[in-house]
Length: 135
Image 1 (tube, one colour):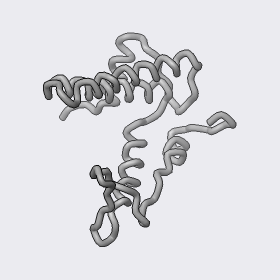
Image 2 (cartoon, rainbow, N blue to C red):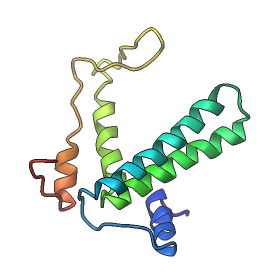
Image 3 (tube, rainbow, N blue to C red):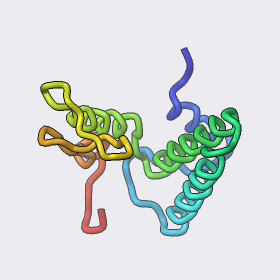
C-alpha cells in the first residue's frame, strides 16, 4: 500500500528542512505569500497543458498542484486529508434523496436544497486550532 500524499510531502519537507507546523496556525505573511505563489504557478501549468498538452504532462502538473497544496497545508499545520473528507461529505449532500442532481449548463454539479456546507472550522478545531480575530 502506498503512503498518503500527506505522508509523502511531510517526508519531503523533513528531508529538505522546510517549514512544518503541528497544529493549524497562521504563518508569517512572507511564507504565506510564497506558498500562494507556488500554488498559482502550478495551477497555471495545469491550465496551460490541460487543453492541448499530452496526458502524461497533465498528470504530472496535476500531481504538482496536489503536492504543493499538501505542502501548504503542512506549513500551516492543517491535516488536509481530514479537511478533504469534510468537503467530500458536504459535496455528497448535493445529491438529492431521490438521486437527482442539479447541473449548470456546462455540467457543473450545483448545490440543491439538501446541500449542507462543510464545517471546516470544526475540523480544524479538532486538530487543535484556536481561531482568533484574524482567522
